[in-house]
Length: 301
Image 1 (tube, rainbow, N blue to C red):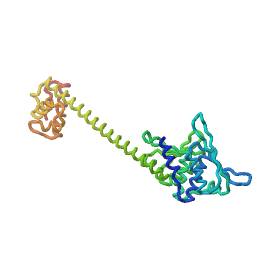
Image 2: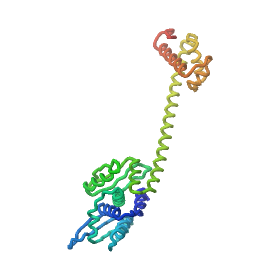
Image 3: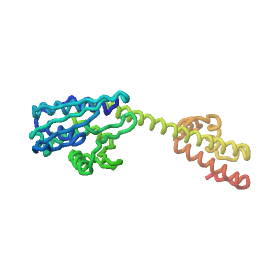
Image 4: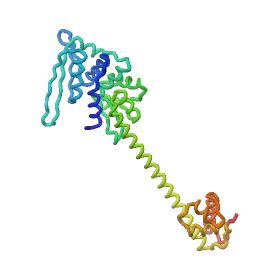
């Protein structure tokens, strides 16, 4: 089962205790997956069509718990696709409360968002990316849902996709928050585990990359130093060098893999990293002088 399927399965089994919350959730289900009509006597008719058995089951149960009215449900099987379509129909003046529900309380907003996601929402596999969305049929519906989500200090946005309008979230932390708002706590914990593992892997990769870059930098510097020292040795020798530079040059040739700190400790008169670095820079300058000028034009100061 996909991660979206797991969330919907969890939410489909969650029922609010308060009647007004059930009304809000039922209203979202119908607005996203169904419609309201009037018969010849002015009575409200609720129609809902879905291929998700969780949505059908939730809608059927909410109608029974909230209004205790008879509800018709028809199931059509598509043997070619191996899927089922569920058609729910209910009639009664009481259903006007669902059509005209006003969602103001925080608990009702939670229920409405939950119903909207069950009906037409989806979420990507968190192992690959973070993307939460709810597809709406009209811009008005999308704006209403976006404002409701943003009332929880979110940053939901709308994008048009063909004939639909999609309300979506991209930030991992905000998706965690929206799962908490919808009360999908099992899915929330699973997502948090994935986020922690991804963050740990990214941290390890950053450290490895940083250490590799430092090693490459050290190796490159060591190779350049060796080339400069060998060039000086082969062209003018070390006798013209001051004792400090000569000591560093000979020690570097003997210990080509030593760090600056280790190199400083191996000298006849030990010095620190900065002192070793200064002398190596002097050797590099002298190497460039030898390459570009007559032998003997070397700075010793």
